[in-house]
Length: 137
Length: 137
Image 1 (cartoon, chains in turn yellow, green):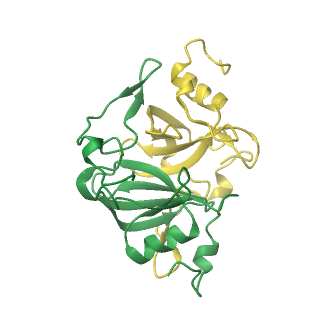
Image 2 (cartoon, one colour; image 1 turned 135 degrees about the horizontal axis):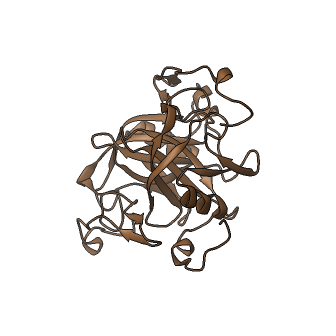
């Protein structure tokens, strides 16, 4: 499932970086809120398409990151778009549980620059301590 | 203006990659449309904040990229947010001219994966040949 498919012209149009990764932005398909940015390698992209759920590549843990595997905060992919130069993907997703961030917030972009400081502008919806069965973001 | 400011705690919270860059996503503040993803170095981030207009770092040209300098398609920054691990910025912008992409489209994410191919889902609003006074994206 994760090996290169026969008809892979579309896959060859993705411009992988020197680490074999492409940036992937997840946007809430309903609200338009940008939830997070992560990375995919070829395997995680193929798994995402095959399963319909976002699978990223965790650079910090050097392993596949099945988003929500532990927390339940899966991202159901509605559509996927590639940018003009092929080095970024945009995923329209349904964010199960309404929480994308490992801090328990809706979006990872919860710190806004105000008066020369990153001010938290978003409430924690769920205590991260209760969110995970094991290490997962 | 582009040297490191005295009060730079907020700047130190940005997690620059090994090339000294941070990913920057531009989102249309009015429509919510994700327009593009580019990169900023410290200088371009400081210039963006000082001017109020998005300034990126062009990796292909290894120089500051004052978005819209040639095309007029400037991005007026409404707000800027940092993600939880500090390696991505989200800019809410007013896209002057309604065109972010060098192909003449509103968004750079105009190719959607459909039936194993990236299908263009967005009209060209302006002929790129008429868009630039010189090389600029």
